[in-house]
Length: 86
Image (cartoon, rainbow, N blue to C red):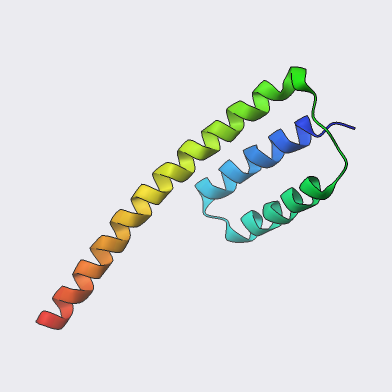
């Protein structure tokens, strides 16, 4: 049994859940990935390219989220300091 399609669907669902900021869905997807990782399923080398493209897309989204989160954290810290100074 190969997991190519399942893995691709999980990656697509993860991208959608991140876009929707759906934390419960992200937790459910995390559990699904854990089960997939523990299974004996393999992937088909011939069709893995579409999975790798989704993985790369997710990496880019997570990288951008990290940058945005860091900027929000800095702004929050600055606003908190300014509130105490007044």
